[in-house]
Amino acid sequence: MLDYPAARAVFFVVQTGTFEGAARTLGVTPSAVSQRVRGLEERLGVILIERGTPCMPTDEGAWLCRHIEHVGLLEGQLVDRFPQMQLQPAAGPVTLRIATNADSLATWLLPALAAFTQETSILLDIAVDDEEHTADWLRRGRVTAAVTSLGKPVQGCQIKSLGRLRYQATASPEYIRRHFPDGVTPEAISAAPALTFNQKDRLQQQWVQDSIGQQISFPTHWLPSSQGFVDGALAGMGWGLNPIHLIRDHLASGRLVELIPGSTRDVSLFWQTNHLAAPHIATLTRAVVEQARRALS
Image 1 (cartoon, one colour):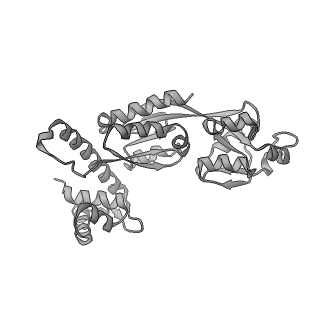
Image 2 (cartoon, one colour):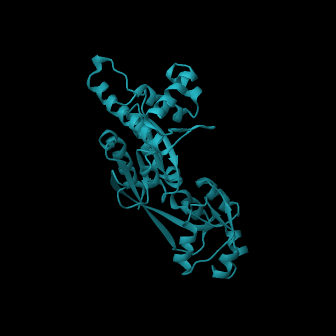
């Protein structure tokens, strides 16, 4: 049988990032937390926490944290069903970890998450990664649900289609005049600085391939911020693909211009949830799906 006090110690070390933080949450000493974690690691024969600043879970530790999360969801329902028993969830207030891409968080997703938090006492821990990689968080047990571009279910997960997030390649009028005086040609693209979110971001390359018909290398500024993309384009730093939600007003006012009018790129998005937790976070799933239907193509 799992040593739940030790498992909760692992959970809170991961959640707070330190043994000291876990000790404060649990009301014990850091030494007691360390002993619980080390004892559980010895019994299971695996390392659960990578010690550092902050402490991070191994893959096995992440799976254990999701188990404690699911137990908390179940016991939270038990408290609702039997309030006279004055039970407390196994890990205190339940914290649900989900993954999403930055652009969804910056455009349509947050209202759904806010609505969920107003209906429940569950807390949220939101991890941000490229939409092509958030499914990996589910596979590795690091999150319970994710917004992802993967259109087939991750093993052990349920999937719902959300719609398409549309992007437009834009830049400032001055940038267009400076770098594309003769139009968006292969030669011009190869010399014009772009904006790229991070090394996982392939949207700009995919748009070039779709719009120009060939793969082209181009210089880029690395700018890991959805709003920073818009601000960087407005400031003339470079061209980049922005969600239409963030640039409608700028396009209407002429502060931003499409590189190739009408040449958009759509990214299909899906909501995947761990099938064991899915019944217990149906309220969140409903909020996410309803908001996506209102906001996405």
